[in-house]
Amino acid sequence: MSAPTLYPYQREAIDAVAKARAAGMNRLLLKMPTGTGKTVTFAAMLAHPHFADLMTSGRAPTMLVIAHREELLDQAVDKISRANPRAMVSIEQGSRGANAYSDVVVASIQTLAAMKFRRLKLLMRRHNFRIVIVDEAHHAAAPTYRTVLAHLGFLPLEDVSDETNDDQASEVDVAKMTAALAAWDQRAPKDQLLVGVTATPNRSDAIGLGCVFQSIAFSYALRNAIEDGWLVPITPWVVETNASLDEVRLNRGDFNQRELADAVNNDQRNRLAVSAWEEYAANRSTIAFTVDVAHAHALAKTFTEAGVRAAAVSGETPREERRRILDDFQEGKLQVVTNCMVLTEGTDLPRASCILHAKPTKSATLYEQMTGRGLRLFPGKTDCVVIDLVDIARRHSLQAAPVLYGLPPNLNPKGKPLQKLATEIDEFLEAHPGWNISTQGRVTLEQLQAHARTFDIWKIPDLGDFGIGRTLRWMKISDDEFRLQYPWADGSEVISVAPDLLGHFAVSLTMRPHDGSPVRQRTLVTDAPTAVAAAALAEAFVLQQRNSVVRLRSMDESIAGWRSRPASPKQLALLARLHVPFKPGINMGEASDLIDLANARRK
Image (cartoon, rainbow, N blue to C red; front, side, top):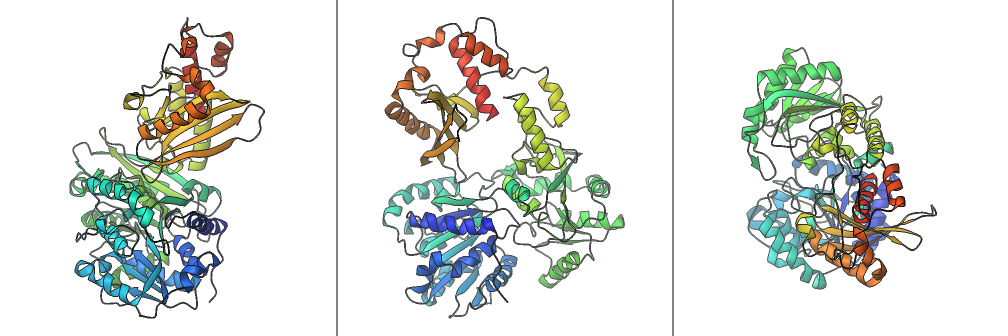
């Protein structure tokens, strides 16, 4: 058995971790889509030259892999063993104890937290954990994970608690921890490495992972993985139902599961799900995601009554029966497997070429996890059909397939491949810069094109609280993204304030030369706690390094007196070329704002 060959992006991820470590960081995050081999990537680190110092010095150095679910443990052992045929890999979970001579220990978070973390402390007496991997690292903000990492020396001991909740996270607690990290990083030991791997760093409760990780060392987008050929393309369908979610309450950013089940688990909606499957994905191997155990069994029964070979799995399904069902599915003996939160993480069923979303969610993280189960490559598989059952939700924004390509969830693709749809939306926005698709309700591209001919979208967005105390005139691009643009040298510069995946804000500088030479970009600020704080740092840069342009972008009318003059012929001609309507008698300031808005939204 030889080690698997790494794909280019996997090698790039490992190199990125080494580069970040050389820069003094040792708590790093890797974002890679489901199906692109996250486990293979971190397994290769064990014997990689970049990390030889961690695995050859001190007493018997060991890698610890922390996983969230039982299924992840056995899969991790298998893949790590394949990548490192000479390594001893063992499991610490429940009644299974890791061999004291193991090179790698794979442990469940629940086991490490057992007996108020005594199980973890016993392990640490026998093993010198120099590399620690957190699989499905979006869970890492929870108290149990942070306590384990504090005992391991990655986080300050102030974060240690007896709480054993392995998923929920308190905003107050996380804010306190994030503040403590600033002082901790100055004294924290650097002779070990923490790497979190996840397909989706964003949590449904909107809590960032900056309370654990210092930096996103490597990020590989789902769209890029599909376009690069490592995952199959998506063919999406939206099926609207009569179920209403308006009375369903929220719990930590997503629906209350009991109330959601009451709203959607009924015969009419389940029959609609089966009818949609028969129309768009008949005979495809399908994974269906449901709200709860009763919903999984009810939907499986509806499929069976329609003559489709189907079965349900859940946390209540005995282990051996669950394995038998999943083996039958992978061998093609079952066409449909319905499940309740069992197949969202750590399940390899590459035969699946259809994902049926019978469970509505507001969580982009959960939605991408579920959809990713159908995107792995498999002989004869050319695409994955994704069917979204979309309920009446006037008060909620439901996730749907377009979000996977950065498109609004309210877009109805009507079976058009996402890659083609994204290209056509880009062309639409090029022709109609500034059009906000997400405000249009559930629409098709054809309806958008009709609306854009008659609807006036040219209104300068108000800065809101962000504008209080600002020295320079910024442009609001979205709810939490702002831009400042001005001429500089032989081109134009754009300063952007936008959030990163860790919940912090970054300031980036983009220089666009007029002669067509390559665009140059650099990051000015990272890890700013708020957009306002990031903007203050950005304005300090402009005042110190670009003082000559302050007159052009000052909020003070006495400094920027040019704004009240009549718009120039050059401005009016540019507005016409950009297809931006403007009122008679427009002044230079108003014209400048409209031009900035058009350019920002086109980019």
